[in-house]
Image (cartoon, rainbow over all chains, first blue to last red; front, top):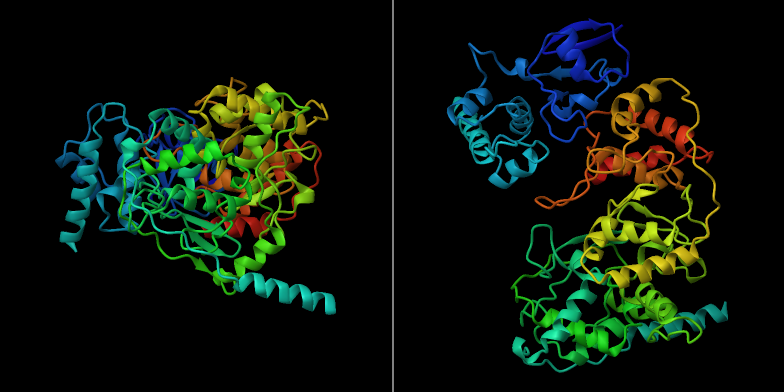
Length: 155
Length: 408
């Protein structure tokens, strides 16, 4: 048994220690925000936060995650009560097919927690590991900029 | 004792001897250069990797400002565009040639050997003319790099005169008439323009290459530059064809993927004449007689490192597909596991491999955020013992991990 702290709650998980976190999130914890994209850590659809830093959950074995803080898309807000970054993505209609967007939101959250006023260049550099095949990058960047503005205004 | 005093006095004299300034020239008009010579210069500049140190990340080509970390402090690449004020626009052909051959700027000041004039001194007159034609026809950019940040006494430029007296041996490359033109071409490129030894040959405490250890393996910007001679530890001996493929594409399925300071080198070699890359590959293949063992991973020893490897690394490295953007080398073949130091495997593990922003290239995700220091150490121990071909455990992991984390 491995205990994982996900979105503030401990979960005892009965799985092989080498199992990538993504499979545990979807198969054991019914958390479907993080998506299976490439399974190789190359696309970012599975991005979650570990101790506030973005990681690819498809290539992160659960054995390295004991006593660490895991935050998934679900930890940033709900459909009824979306968090500030999620609201900004909705307001900018940043999703086309939407498959990459959970990973984008989570990665953007990591940036804004550390740097509340990123420049457009900093946003692009930070977001670059996450791919979007529909090509809504301009809206994604605008959504991150909007989230930064609104988080600042809310303070 | 007397002998040392004499040497020291000689060095002091050499250090203080003023070097002659060469007269400034009016910047030559671009059309005054033969386009064929400019094209040749472009190829030579790529073989010489000039753009790497003379271009800042995201900056204008050849306008300088790129930081180069050395054991003596940080140097910044200079502006070599033909801007008359901040670049080399007022350098005559003679001043340019003297910089390459003697390591002096137009005003006669010594240049730091991070600019590898120890190699460029061997360049032919014709190649220097072509390089001059190329750089003088680039877009002039008004830009001054930050001043070098070197520790005392390395920041005293005049002392380079003493350094040169001790270590710098000027002289043009002499082809060996017993060798083929192709072999001489490879030797010329390796020992002059491509300045391979600048990273792949170890340096002494004063940053001078240890000539008796040519290509024994050196260091560059926190990375180990592997030995390119019989000491090369690759499990499968490098063939000339494999070296060619690696130098041309940055990827050889039985050895390595170019990373760190080697990445820009292979980017440049991808766009030069194939024949020149073959000449380089043949030159080094001849220096690296292999031991011909077949690499084999040891049985999985289990433990914490095994779970990390299986969940984080094996997902790609155990796939058994051809090396491509979606797969990875089986680690029993990977040179990084067989090196005498852990630093390359550590840096690749933490930061991954990625092309510069917006450029295509080879990719591996990094694990700097996913893994704690203790977990990285477990993974290093496990990987070395399972895939290191029987090499002893690394004893530098703690130190190198600290440095790699600091450099980020």
